[in-house]
Image (cartoon, rainbow, N blue to C red; front, side, top):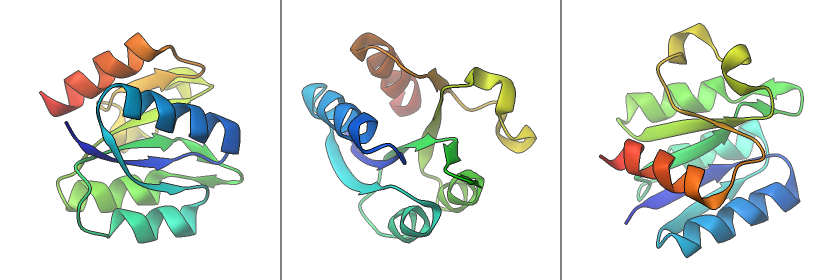
Amino acid sequence: MASVLLVEDEALIRMMIADMLTELGHRVAGQAHDLTSGLLLASEPGVDAAILDLQLGKDSSEPIAVELEKRNILFAFASGYGAGGMPQTFKDRPVLQKPFPLDELQRCMAKLLG
């Protein structure tokens, strides 16, 4: 199982996803609610994968994705808008359409982790 960074600006959704990851046997390596804390946690050791809310308030999580990609850390985006608002650079990354059920998260994590 993986140590997963979770970046989500809505507290209740973040808690729900963290619980789902734990239920799937993963460990939540860290939780962030904004771009600044997400960037900080993305640079920390011990992260195997990440779930990034595409839009963090007025900020995009794209800088966090860039940092994770530099470190060869696998990640997926979560968005209420679907794949439509994806940054062009990351069109190939998995997207979880919020709200998503446990089995969708499980498939996404399996895809990320191979």
